[in-house]
Amino acid sequence: MARLPDQPTVTIVGRPNVGKSTLFNRLVGRRRALVGDEPGITRDRIYGMAHWAGRDFRVVDTGGILPGAKEIIPSEIFRQARVALDQADVIVMVVDGRTELAAPDRDLARLLLRSGKPVFLAVNKIDVPALEAQAENYRQLGLKHLVPVSAEHGSGVAELLDQIMRALPPRHAAGEAEHAGETQGTSVAVAGDRRPTTDDAFADDQRPTARDEIKVAIIGRPNVGKSTLLNRLTGADRAVVSPVPGTTRDAVDEIVTRDGQVLRFIDTAGIRRKGRTELMAEKLSVVMARKHLQSADIALLMIDGSEGVTALDANIAGYAHQSGRSVVLVVNKWDLVQQRARELGERRLASRGAHTARRAKLRPADPQRYEQEARHSLKFLGYAPMVFVSASSGRNVEKIFELVKQVAAERRKRVSTGEMNRFLKHVDFDRAPAPFSKQVKIFYMTQASTSPPTFVIFTDRDVKLHFSYERFLENQVRRAFGFVGTPIRIINRAREEKPGQRGR
Image (cartoon, rainbow, N blue to C red; front, side):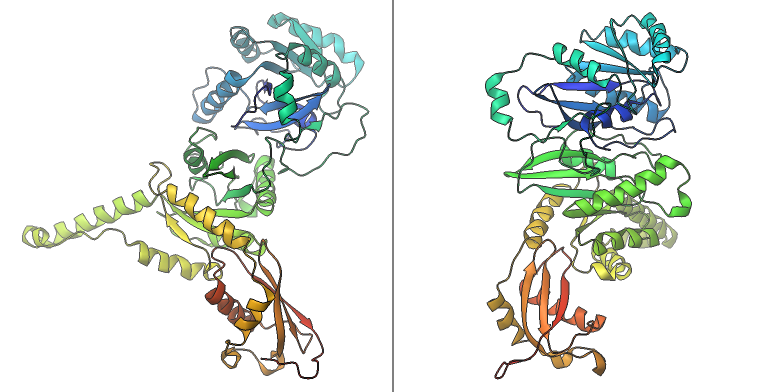
């Protein structure tokens, strides 16, 4: 996580289901983190920017902390929260003011007091003044700064922020002035504040945004290694990783600068079939994953190499293709595929006898054959490059950076109208497979936009292009101009032929 000079950080902590994410969303002014009644929805660290009293500051939402938990996910959440606490200038501990004081609250308060950092106690869910007296019970935790708040309605949030501002380290005037124009902070929405706030869950709210920033969404079904890949690409334990499917729920993103190019990688929740999502958090995470995909430039579609391409993989690939995202196919766990191929070969050799086994050679897993079979299931992604990696060991992960850079350039490529029309002269349209009723005469062709590349052909008939004709034209365009990794859109516009105008 890149941090600007003199940019203070406020970290929100607490046990599960006390309203941390609701308070976080209130501070950043948008629904950045998933919120629901189920405990333990947030698991990773979520970052956002807020603005109060003339200062921009970074806010960090953490998963519900249960000190001493032995289960893998709670312990990983605690480890992620410790990272956020180390980064914090000010800590806000959130408790549920409508419940009794719990042992985990006491344990967490003792842990925070030992940190030596300013700690504020936000007693949440104090929705009416009559409950404020009940909030006083939490003074037993030994935290001096107690503020009753209602994160849902915004009451008490202004008072909490005023106290936080006084505890933040002094601003460095030159440093903050230098970066004032770069931050994308939002004003906090408190009770009675009717300013409009965006519902864009993927807004650039964490860090300064470069105009040429490339947004890369890591998508796929659960447990294919998306979070492991994010951690490997960013060189940090940014996301919780566990063998439990569906560990990631909120989208987790991180900035990487590579050869002067700013890349924002977003780890999304595993997308399941609708019938397989039971918890509300899982349903929301799938919806948000698709929303983050639509906001990205490039999708890294991860496939579990040990299982091959499934029907769900094809469905997820369809989401990316239909939304116009560029796609890189990432076959993960290739080391496991090779290990299984070796073991299978050894068993076959052993069954042939010792003499034959000495003369025979073990055949490693063949990536070309695997790619051929995979592309048969993903025919509509024939333009997408494929890379074989092991996210856990880091093998071939570097190639992803090269492919992302290449695909991003292809996505933004523009071909002049003159080049397009010279290209049309050399296309043999008699080979185009299309019914007679759908055949058209092309006058000229121009590129209307990029990201994804969109072409408009002006023809003699206002008809929807037959899919085979459109595919033929797309293949000809790719053969001439490339556009690796990105879908191509072709739009037909009818236009009367002028005297002397040459058609195809």
